[in-house]
Length: 280
Length: 243
Image (cartoon, rainbow over all chains, first blue to last red):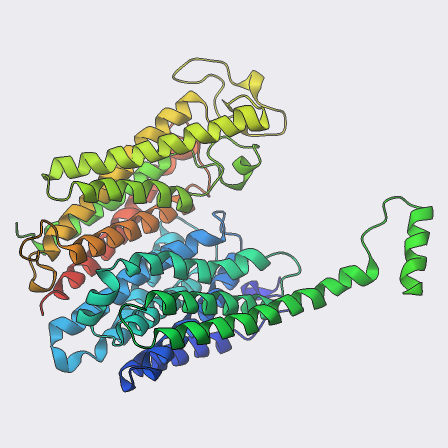
């Protein structure tokens, strides 16, 4: 593992960052353009956020937090969810002409809390993880975009009154808490190890994000006319990404398949296996 | 009841410290305990916070319209019960499944039962299962965390229902939106503080007899600051009801 917890098989950290911030916010802000396309774009924005979060968690958890990969995911989702909803609430307080400020303020508030919590970890708790600050801030942003995106997809708007009616009162907000944490923390938790390839991890991140999107589409049924579009696009995206992930896993497993496992005993078995490999 | 914003921030900060402190009492074994090479429940604090926290908040929310002391007691009872069940069933698996004697390598004698521990610790391990002292400590931890979560839930719920957006609908006893939002907020508080506590103890602790327990003041400081910030976000959330 080289500097910043990135091995040779890693992707440029700016790419998921750009995808998450730009893709996520554009998707959320385009929600009101059309009752069908808008919610779909919001859900795709949440997918971008989840992929960004999966990359950030992979970078920070490469250091070994001592608490497992999921814990930082749960913590980030916790304060990001509160931060995102607070941002929307402040927009309500400012008045209807300031509704647009809600999502971006929510993301910023979540990132500020992320910075404070990471700062406490580094100073008060004396943790020795140099990229904890940067990655916790990134995770907070990614988590808040994912919550806002899925909420806007169900409500068809990013205004707090609509989200209160169709996301908070039915209790979907608690579901997003766990669903988005799973989508963000699972890819690295499943792929970590000495032979981790970040491209393969992010393929799994796309598949968890799309399956979360498909579930969002199904639960949006009572509130959104776009529910079937979100569910179908999510399911197609999941199929494409999980197929690609399985293919990548097989390709990398070929290294083991071609060279074989280590010999059971020195001598006859080993020679026999080498012979078999040469023949094949 | 009108809740002053400062009281809300204070309640959330106190709740956060109770949660963070409570985690130090819970025997969190992490991955080593999952393979019975360390004392405690074989999972991390995040999962225990999810189990204990959610159960505590369900029992607290069931008592929503009751006075404060009853809501807090209900939250504590729910969390302590869930953690008690988790530790009991975990112990069944360790005793009859793995086949090891619950024992701790951190103390020579159990401080409560005075039973000798070192004879029963498998060489090369840090102990296994959940001995009496860990179980009692875990129940105390569950009670404290449950109190903390219920405290935050109660004050946010009453702050929210004072606003027009979250007001109790006519003919109903509770406001569903306020209860859901306050419950999710309190659950978030559980996760934030349990993970901060978890960072402080390096992922595993046995209970109040563990030497790592002495690190509690450091976690309390971190938890009170982090929770006060989350409480300030709670004040902003209340503003969202003014439509």
